[in-house]
Image (cartoon, rainbow, N blue to C red; front, side):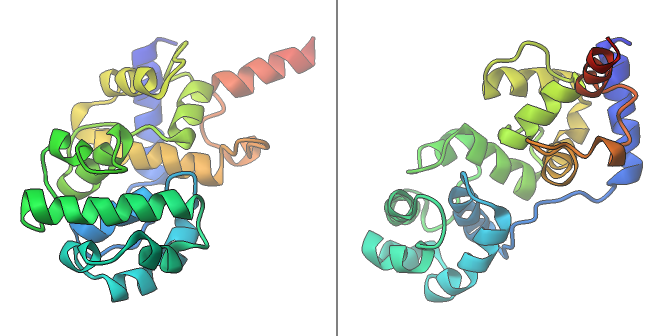
Length: 217
């Protein structure tokens, strides 16, 4: 099977199995999404969604959050991973949005990455979810699933995986393909015990077929 055929098979499968894949983070506007994505680093979306309602009630806009100290923000997010660092990031990020961008989340990827706590992956997630930008944010799920299926080959870094996936998927499908791979990794292709019996891609999955070959030896 060629790489092109593998991608075609993946697109065909997910187009039927997961036609409306989207972010599981709860948000109502660009600022809320940006904050939620920052909080989601090394933390589950479920935990973030349990945390953000009170946070957004207290600080519904960048301007409101810009007036809060890191200590005040920490009180709302202390149940998530790395709350100290994330509270500092959010306090600074909110001030930057107000001072540099008039209180609105910037749409330019470079401007987004100029904000405290916002790296390439976070900027790509916001761009893909909000504006349908044709990018492939790579988190641990995407990195793992892409390698297992065989969509990425010898990609040792998230950036290498990102470039291979962006070259393999049709450009217009990148925003939803990002969610396909995340959700597949979150619920089926688990890190420790993948549910191969529930997966419809075992016929092309390198991980599954390599394991079966090993067992048959």
